[in-house]
Image (cartoon, rainbow, N blue to C red):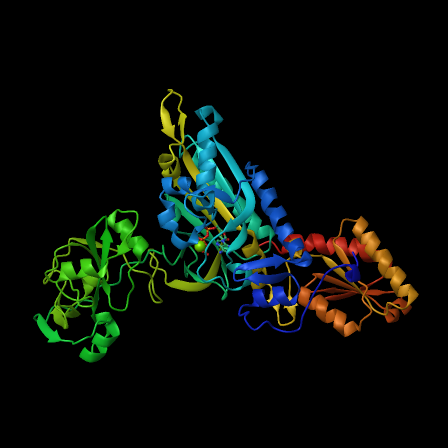
Length: 578
Ligand code: ATP
Ligand code: MG
């Protein structure tokens, strides 16, 4: 392929609205173009990379024994109503709008495909003899992301590989656990082959619901999530999930009696702690949730945050929602902002750190008042205590090793769904006793665009992208200097043809431009190998090979090129695995 016949709109300008490196570089290197918020065109060069990511994903899914199919983006809303996800997904679920009972009104754009695949299983899987089976697709997802950002890291339309497995049992041969492990291993292979540094973490199953899940995270400042790892490397979890070692009881005792203080209009931890000259960690935050119409109260220290996923688990419910002001007022008899545990009649889950507090400050359940000298156990009963807060710097993992926080982005997710979808959609099979049973399911998603962008986040320098060989748009660029010199042109063409014949992805920069200009573009786009053919080198009978990542330069004779480049590519594919 010759550059002059290709379509590569590179640019020097850093786009004003692009904050993260992958976004800036993908636009500057002519890989993508924004169409609207969260929607991008993949230009020919960018699409080559995306297709390479796709090929790796497809290959590993096939190796894991999954079968490829293709499902549509248009789904009947009834199926989503059946699983309760019209509500659970909220604005993320994009809907078409028609007038009245028009078909559009009853149609949504698929953000994921559990409903559609479960309907297929329901229709065609009748017997345990057909199980297990894994199906996958690589298909465009639509999500009403509130804040699409960071280029293709978070968009409203993206390519996902989503796989689903169906089983008659959880454990043992053919069970969910076995396929889950296979998929987990396949994911490790995918990220490794794509050359991106990844960390699998325990995760919460969130709105999709289910038993167990792992997320695959790439550490990067461009990420919006945090992962926490124990310093000793034995534990990794996402922030939502991370278990905390109980804080040490440093002793102390109740010294003060309860005392009501006037705190007019002060409803926040900051306001009250400043006014009363106490530390936020000396205050008890009383957060009221609602579960099936009943209040559920969580108590955490003033400097801590309630972790709703942990709270729901501790309470034994699937989710908790913040209580409406009316419920709070009814329960506390006060305006919002003055709730406290003393005298509060509701189910209360006390965070472990709160149980260690003495002489604390909290709301008085009376508008414009707080109380001081509050001692858990003395002034209110601790019936239920659990780890219901989010980890903070300084916390330790369950094994006692300090927790380290890293900003990251999720690139893949595997879930053990269990029977959540098969139950709600009544997808059953007959077991070996002829009894109908709900199908046991797993689901496994990977964002292809995000892999590509995460690779760039992990691999770039001040001059441009330093692609992993496996997903670079082209493996090699030949920079033909002095295109007007016949020897240069003919050797460049010859090398191009020989490499192409050897199965190497090569682009010939045949533009009539200055060397510096070509080199800058080559660095920006990040071809892993650059071969320079110029009349000066030719006079000495050599061409120059530059390796983008290491900056290594090799001067070799033209007839060594194919063998040398082939070897470099092979080695890079091997060594760049993560
Ligand atoms: P996030 O927490 O980042 O929104 P998610 O939990 O919604 O991700 P899943 O529903 O598990 O993601 O989707 C599977 C994969 O699809 C993710 O691991 C990610 O790689 C990709 N993905 C999800 N949302 C987006 C998006 N808005 N843009 C690009 N890729 C996405
Ligand atoms: Mg999401």
